[in-house]
Amino acid sequence: MIGKLYRRLPIAAISQQADKAVSEFRHIVRIAGRDLDGKKKVAAAVSDVKGVGMNLAQSLLTSLRIDGRLRLGSLGEQQISQIENGLKGLDKVGLPDWMLNRRKDLDRGTSLHLIGSDLNLIIKEDIEREKQSGSWRGMRHSLGLKVRGQRTRTTGRKGRTIGVKKVALVAAATAATAAAAAAPAAPAAAGAPAAAKPAEKKEEKR
Image (cartoon, rainbow, N blue to C red; front, side, top):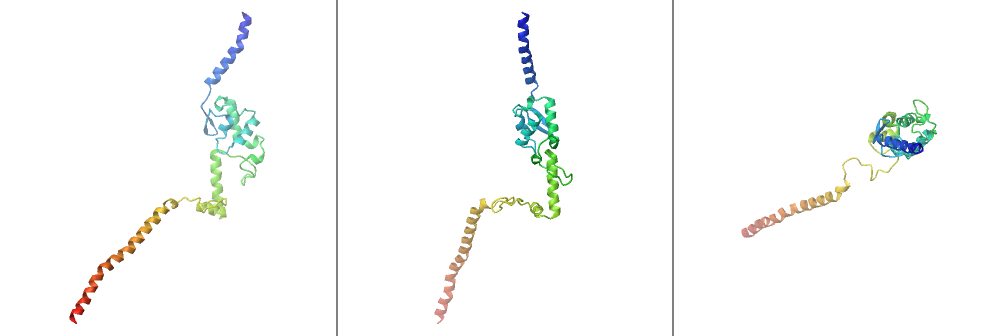
């Protein structure tokens, strides 16, 4: 009887842990100021943070020894805090510099990685610096045109679309031209008999 109880204890403990994991599953997990879907796998969910791609997320999880195939909602608080701290200091995790998005920063002189609102802010500052310096890129930014040498003959139009209405405009212009050409012809035809009457009167006088 005692042997049977000892045999059942591990099974009961496993079932309790499973029930605890299911009960603690979170469908929304907040990391780096963003609400992430807890039903996604960890690598895919972390890559939803602005400034973090799939390769960077996989490398971060590998360095933290967290299985990227797990669901984000099943992770504990300690693992979530490890991921968040790793995202805040990716330059200190041990990743190579070429994986960071801010190499040799002008202000600090070091390589770092920015995410979320910090990334948006630094991009705006870079664009404003280009505009103030009067560089070609700054001029293109100020004019709202493409910057990286793309073609702009048929793309990059932000104003009113013309190509869609071109056929209708051409047809309307043709109809207006035809109406304008036909309008002077009618008075001329109506005035022809009036011009012939004075000639007849002249012949009668003779």
